[in-house]
Amino acid sequence: MPTNPYGWIDKSLAALHRAHRYRSVQAIDGMAGPMIQRQGQTLVNFASNDYLGLTSDPRLAAAAIAAIHTYGTGSTGSRLLSGHRELHRELEQAIAALKGTDDAIVFSSGYLANLGAIAALVGTPDVVLGDEYNHSSLKTGARASGAAALDYRHGDMAHLEELLSIHRAQYRRCLITTDSVFSMDGDLCPLPEILELAETYNAMVLVDEAHGTGVFGTNGSGVVAHLGCAGRPLITVGTLSKALGSLGGYVTGSQTLIDFLRNRAPGWIYTTGLTPAATAAALAAVQIIQQEPNRRRTLWQNVAIVSQGLDRLFEAAAPPQLKPLPSASPIISLEGPSARAVLNVSQQLQQVGLWVPAVRPPTVPSSRLRITLMATHQPHQLDQLMQALSATATIAV
Ligand SMILES: *Cc1c(COP(=O)(O)O)cnc(C)c1O
Image 1 (cartoon, rainbow, N blue to C red):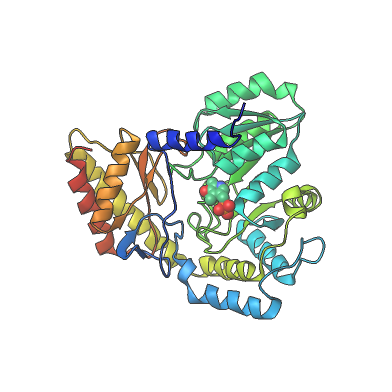
Image 2 (spheres, rainbow, N blue to C red):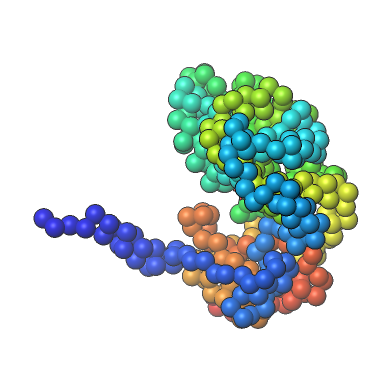
């Protein structure tokens, strides 16, 4: 019986094509900013996580280049062997100071920070309760840890409490996980309520500030501070790759937590230390986000302009093909009736010089256009977006 053990891959890809779920990469040429070049076309970029425009900041580039000249391009080993530099420690202390926590530990990516922290904190005798819209790294981390992993309905505190009351007693430890800013919807988690339930049910809380750091809080500390929860007993995870314009991830918390992770997080122990360039760029960014609150102010002005514009637009259009999802951040999603419909609108916007990506299942439960705003978007670029959307909202999708 001659069979091809890899034949299923072709079938699987064909199924993705049929469902309009096939994806591929497209190269961006040159510097990433509010305007990008792609396949010879100039586009206004509404798809970047570079909220404050720091990726192209010459100070980050200078810090990265200086670190390469001083230390080389790689860190040559794991932090516990040959890979540790004083620069890593400086970055960790700067992040801890920004967050107002005892200490911090940096990982090679935000994804790895979640996998590493969760695997260190819980195992088979434990339970993880996560918001159903959590980022993939939280979900994968919970599954990989061997703990029982249960989802509560998005932002639904009654459901979280129900799960706690039914399941908590059967497990040794309990960890509640949530995004602070939900990356595909742009709304915030109800952190004060989560912390209250955690206290009642003796549970740990891990908050993912990937889209919060640099964007929320008076000094850019994040949503934890914005919601008045700084200083509460919790574990914060984040990335160096979004508002901080570099690459890497981190965990912040108590001295004992961070000390424990240095000893027990496999995703930190058995991987090479962050590169000197990424470390130095992130360190420069942590300083800039605190010293230049104007960047945040401009970003939030841009958010206000677009959300007010969308409100006006969707009051006028009847029946609207696209529906704005509740947002409290620079991430604004417009839900569409189908994967094909949002792909069509995304392509129409591209034809007029705007890059607004379509995000489809399985990344999200419902297809949508996802707009992300930056401090470096100019008013005329936001006007262009509103005008193009008002043209597409009235046509058949
Ligand atoms: C981007 C993101 C991550 C992963 O961070 P990387 O540094 O890109 O690996 C984790 N959690 C959330 C919520 C994210 O949006």
